[in-house]
Length: 193
Ligand SMILES: [Zn+2]
Image (cartoon, rainbow, N blue to C red; front, side, top):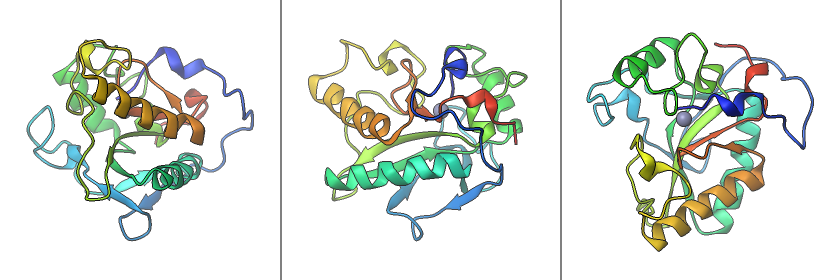
């Protein structure tokens, strides 16, 4: 998922041009994460797989930030559960056909940060592998998924802020309408892959 207004937001900390565009695969054995790549399964809003491969791929610039996030989460006794990372253009078209609301889905012709390999959708799990309560499911395309939202419990809000703190401290930009979505700053500098 992605957002349009953020795409021109400059990174206050980093102004270098993106490095190379080759995607790197992240696995549970190479990194201290859990993978639950929902779009490669039936367990998503569409109810059928919309990507052909169960692989978690990221641009090297995004991977560098993710590795920092993994360390920060570990310091809190938590792990990251990755729900989506690189997303092929054909999958973005499936999502747009399902929900043509640019608040939640980037129009395919504009190009999602996910299709640039520089966005992740994720949540947090505790030491036992149990997901923290974030107040909504992944891809709840409603106001309930907005970061600032009085309808979720205090605990769920606190859990969202924990994820937000981990990700922003690691250098990610966030998206106010989706608690699970984070992306590299200057997303439009990165080509669609
Ligand atoms: Zn997303």
